[in-house]
Length: 294
Image (cartoon, rainbow, N blue to C red; front, side, top):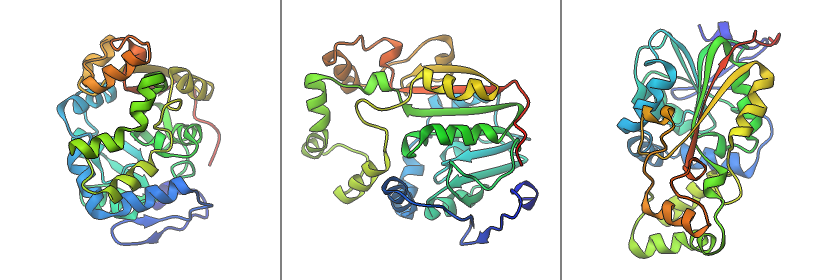
């Protein structure tokens, strides 16, 4: 079945639990992602701790109109498989794409057909997917727009492209004292012994993967609309903090942790405003025919 959706002349090599396609070129960011998420211990910790809560599941179920039962799904930047592990269902086909072999091997154990490939240049034919999911992945990629366009290429007519958990530029654009605290945050975390990572080495590599997660960078509603509307998509973008579920689609942003409220206050912004919400969720439906590509 995998061969039926590959581009002409593509041959995948089988590895330990996943398939490999040719990767063209390289960059420091991609190498960092391959190394960090390729470490199975770190990938397992990420799988256990991130994007697994009830708020996340509520948003994704509402965005997709239910779980993934009966759907052909492409998960770009799938990591060890957090999204499907949380959303659930019985997809007709579940494809996971990542540059980290260790994560792909873990994803394959929970039902993914896992493919090592660049998310901006996948080996699949156009218009194969009912849902393309891109969760917490765009900001790990060198060219966010290129990955978004590639995801769009894979969506069938009336299909969905759903992205979430990428940092909203306006919320993370810290100023003045807030920027100084951001720059010093690692020392503060070490002093108070707070943080997701167990070691400085793990934290260093984790930060190297987050190419666009820094003050003055990130995604905006205009970025999603300008990229996807010309490709034939109807685009809805919802700002939210992480502790809110489907109510994010009712215009609610939900509560933010104190440190993020403080960062926005010190930057001269209303911490309750939509522009101060940490993430954007984009739900884009293809309303025009898919492009005439292979």
